[in-house]
Amino acid sequence: MGPSGCYEKNKHLIIGVDEAGRGPLAGPVVACACHITEHIDDVADSKKLTAKKRHQLASEIILKGQVCIGIENNMSIDVSDILRATMAAMKTAANTLCKKLGGKGLIIVDGNRVPDGLVWQSKAIIGADDSQYCVSCASIVAKVVRDHIMDGFDMTFPGYGFSKNKGYGTADHLEAISRLGPCQIHRRSFGPCK
Image 1 (cartoon, rainbow, N blue to C red):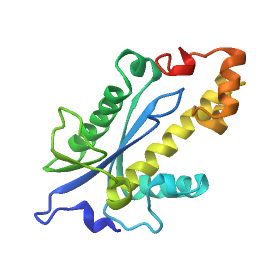
Image 2 (cartoon, helix red, strand yellow; image 1 turned 135 degrees about the horizontal axis):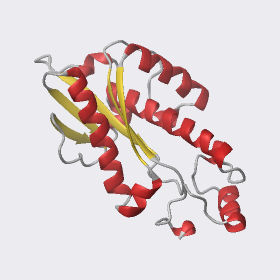
Image 3 (tube, rainbow, N blue to C red; image 1 turned 120 degrees about the vertical axis):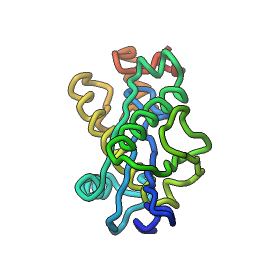
Image 4 (cartoon, one colour; image 1 turned 135 degrees about the vertical axis):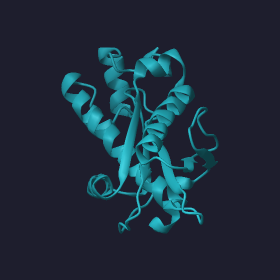
């Protein structure tokens, strides 16, 4: 997989879009839109990489490519729902990058649907985070940005282990919610945090 997939045959730009943080009990959902034309070794779906490798690759992707981030916090998730919040974060990231790049292009979104209101033509591809270079790059950056946010929340809300569990429903995290109750960044619309 390489950056040649970041241009269509007619030289229109391709932007890859992916998210991190749909499943956790706490924290935001983060989307990244990425356009990159330089090859970076070892780029793959973020779930297949170690945290150390993700950090290394994210730095390189940000340096060599163009990325924009969209974030919807836990309150937005609770007011709408996780799907709508995810679509809003993706739309923000993608449209911001489209405007930054100018011209025309194609947005490839990982998954089975695309957000409404995208300014470029778009298509959803299930498994694009593993098959489309720009989407793989977006998945890495989204995960690293979200992990960094959760590391910060670990200091603000001690006792929940956010730097370790990243807000996911691990046994230790569920025990902390039971003991301490939910904190300000917990998603109140998600089971254990209601």
